[in-house]
Structure formats: structure tokens, C-alpha cells
Image (tube, rainbow, N blue to C red; front, side):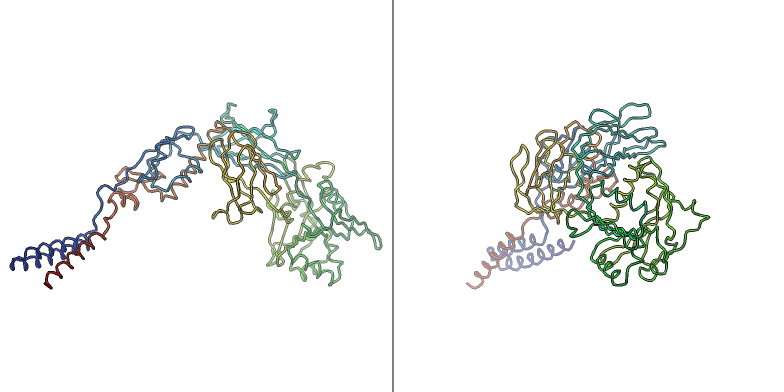
Length: 562
């Protein structure tokens, strides 16, 4: 509106000037002032180029996620995309510029999302989860070995869209498991490969100090030794008798300081201060509280309020744990934190009955933890594997992770042949060479979205294990076949399409009562900002009009001077 008023005012002033020259019969001056007025009015008129409207394109994807090459090449020149199908994979969308997207996901597709780690350490549970697009009852999730042997199974007792199962790998090796989903009648819904790399865990470095011998300490020592932990172990057996176990390698930075309550209570103040100084530097201190006897010391030195365990409620306070199908019942410690353990203390873990059995507090850069259960040695013979898993889960929770110089990252959840994938790594330097099995060597590149890692693009050629190496470190990743897990591939394409729509502001390219956004919601017939600009056309440059106006005025001035 303002531009139109300004243009009309300029034209009115030009008309008055032209009338003045017409009365004096100065026809050349009249033409110059008229042309100057038209040029100045055009500068303020916000003129648009009529042929600049970018056309919308229709992009159709089939069941396999393939799209027309011509349509993909036309996306950069398009004003908006009208999408039909489940969309493209993340790598394909990232190769295209952001454009307003009009898309309504198909409603009849059976989708599947799989969630599992592709690498686990030996001794840790492998957890596999499957989520379906619709909740149903009676369906099953099975994990099979390479020879078809059933390893684990989960069944949906009620209507649910998600099932999870666990399995303990026995060996450190790369394996290609199989998973399948069965409906209530036993018919296979979906099936496909599940790649898993079981790697040997870095040895845990434990500094153990105990002032009261017990079967629990002996069972724990055996479990840690069988787990290949590096132990510096000292146990006081009597007034002048002690048992020592020297570490096979120097403990430069222990992952865990492990003591019993009696050891802390019998320390002199200087030794206790030295221990807490080590904790303050970042080492976690786990206290086995079964033999605690001096509640006042723990209140005074650690701010931990303990209360005696009542004999009448001992059975009710027994901590219950379900570990890999087995039940462990552990006796609570004689002195345990009460409901108000202390301002700095919080419950770090609870059992199946939601009773706390592990408490912790921060100690500068480290932590102090109180283990309030005992008598786990009773399961060293009757249930050795569940006991080992229980301690493994506890150690994973409290111990420092083993330091690693470098580590691989696999951002692509399902790489397939012929489609660009990505490999990232921590601890590598940009420009360092990466050897890719069956492909040309590449070099690490820094990425803005990967602040602590470097990445490299790769195009897998065939399904199977893809090996790579860099800086003396080796790794591998499984490449799926194009026909593996079709329902999961559709779900990945839909998720990637939704992210692309969000990046493009998820606005449709055309107006109307039936226009929908990427989520299928009406947009009230209004154009998105990008689409409005495309429909109006690009603005005409003002510089030529300004130059014409200046020439006309200079010529008019020159003629007036004559």
C-alpha cells in the first residue's frame, strides 16, 4: 500500500511538470520529465518478474523407497514438494535442499522399529526391543542363533505395541543372529538379521580394603577374579594376620575403591582423610555396609544417618531381585540409611519391591556409595550366573568406565548397499586416513554436528560385514541387504521424512481448504512464506530505473543550462 501511494505521488508530480513544459511548447523537456517520473515511480512500485514462479513437483516413492531420478534432480528448482509414499532415507534427504513439503503418510502400512546395541561387552546383557505401529495381544518376539536355535523369547500377554527380551552372549565374537515376530496364531509377521559384536571388556581395576573377613568378601573376590579384574586386595584376618593380593599391573587410576564399613570405622583420622581425598579426585568409593557398627561416625564424617534393622521386619525388608529369570533375596544390612538418609544422600537403586538398597552422595569430583545388602555368598553355588549378573550391573552403575583412546560410532541404524552411509569415530584426527574394506581409502572430516568426533562418508557395495581401520584401530559394521526388514525400512524413511519436513518448516506449497502440512494438518488456505514468495515472483531490480531517472534529470539540467 505504501509503495502504491508513493508511486502515485511521483506520477502526479511528473504530470504537473509535464504540463508546465507543454504550455511552453518544450516537447523534448516534456518527454524527459515524463520518462524520469515513470522511472522513479517504477522504483517505488515493488514490481515483480512475471515468469519467476517456481513450479511444484510430485515426488513418488515405491515400497522399496526408490524415486524417479528426474524428480530428484528437479527438487532444487522446485517451489515445493508434493510427496507420495513413505519418503526417502536420511542420507537422500540430506542431499536435497530444504523445500516446503506437502505429505500425508500412508495409513495402511505395517511399521516396525527395532532398537538394539550393535556392540556389547562380554558379560553384559544384550537387550533387543521391537515396536510395532499398532498394539496387539498375543504376538511374540524371538531371538534365534545362526543355526536357528531359540535363544530368548518375549510374549505380549495384553495388547501392546512393544516387546523386549534379554540374552547373555557366551563368547566375545561377531555374530549374526536372527529375530522374528510371530502373531497370536504363530504366523511370521517379520523376520531378519540382527548383527551383534561381543567384545572383550577392559579389565576392571579395583582397590579393595577389608577389616572383617566374611563369606561375602570371599565370594566377591572370586567373582572379580573370574571377571579378569585387576585386584589390589587386602583383608585383615586377625590382629596381626592379613591376606594380600597384589595387582598384576600397577593401578595408576583405579576404577573403583571397594571397602567394608569396618575398614572405614577402624581407620585413624589421617588415613580416613587420605582416602576421602582420593575420592575427591574422582574415584568412586563403594562401602559394603553389612558390618557397620558405629552409626555416630557415619553421621559425623559422611552425613549419613543410619538406623538399626529391626528383627521383626527383617523378612519384610529382604531385597528381592529378578535376574535373568532367577530370584535373588538378599538380607538388608544391620545398619542401613533411614527414610531421611541425609540431605546429600539419595537412593541410587531399588529392588523389585521399590525398596532402596544402594545409596550415594557426591564427594567433590567423586562419589561415596553405601551397599545396604548382604549374604550374596549364598548364591555363589546355587545361582552363580544370576549373582554374577547382579554384581556386573552394580559395577557398571558405580565404577568408572575404562579409558579408551578411540572409539567407533555408527550413526546409520541400517546401512544398505548403494546408499550413502556414514562412519564416525572419537579419538581420531581430521585428515587421518581411514581404510575401508573393498573401497577406496578416505580421510576423516570434522562435522559441525559432531563436536567430539570426526566422520567419513561411505557407499557400501554389498551386504555383509564391512571392515574398516584407522590409526591402528580396527572395527566393522554390518550392511543389510536391500530386502531385509522392509517394515523397519519404511519406518526409518518416515522418520527421516518427518525430520526433513521439520527442517523445511513443514509447510505445503499450495493454498486451499484441502492443503495439508507434513503431519496432515490443514493450513487454513494460507501460503507458507517460501511458497508466497514463489507465487509473487522475484522483485525486479531497481538499479536500471534509478540509472534511467538520473540520466533523464542530468539531460534536463543540461538543456536548461543552455
